[in-house]
Image 1 (cartoon, rainbow, N blue to C red):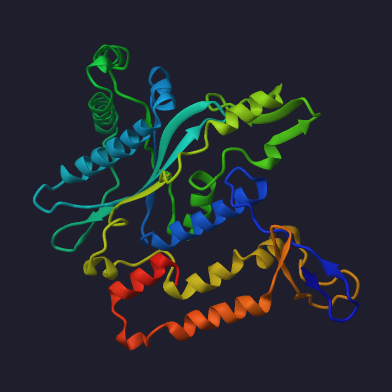
Image 2 (image 1 turned 135 degrees about the vertical axis):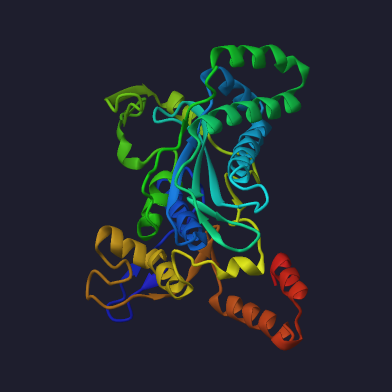
Length: 355
């Protein structure tokens, strides 16, 4: 509860529900996630690749969600293999981020991996090697083989007939989009937010809801044709619910340079310097986000224009004492030993237990 100290006007602001499927919280989750990803990126050109699977395999991943891990493993092995073949002695290692999307534009079940790969890698001699050519045929064939092998190892011998059928039907491997995308480091944050950090469906794509039917639109992927679809509300909810990930399942995974923590990696130039991190984090806070998105200050009193202040906090419809919260924080702060006597392991432990 916020209040104006001049005119006494009150304003109540709800807490976030932290659901990825909430139109408001899901958008903020996307912004937070893309900002964290952009801080890791190296100051080099990246390539956006999409690893897809044929329709015949999609139901396996819907019936057994653990198979989604096989997608990540197959993409990881294929990219490492491609860079390893460039110079086996140097062991060139790229940096790449994999994001799982289980939805298509029509909200149907369509698992695929969006991958942002550095166009280059660092070798054993710590020299950066620029890579502009991605072997498209190698990626297709290797990804097909790697994924089918991972699925057979997980499912068992019963998958062999399906595996043989897929090899016959898809002799050129699985479709992979790996064309140069000119993903410049200066525009990397916007690029990540558009392709990697988006929610299942944006609110602006939902055109109408009359209590029974939901109307939404999308541009068909094959020919970019505008499609408007009207389906029952329960069917719409069913399409959304199937994309909720399992608890503790990681939809974003970092590999190569972006995953390891070596002293040599500190020599790499990041796309966004550390000095700008705090400045960018200020822009994604609640007050600043509302101001930049809708053009008004949510804490400015609509009656007199004075800045409103926090008066009370309510949780589960009960008032939470600000004085008690302050005293709890101060007690925890006084209980901590001096920073000079705390080891790195102790810091990790206190963070884990929430001290």
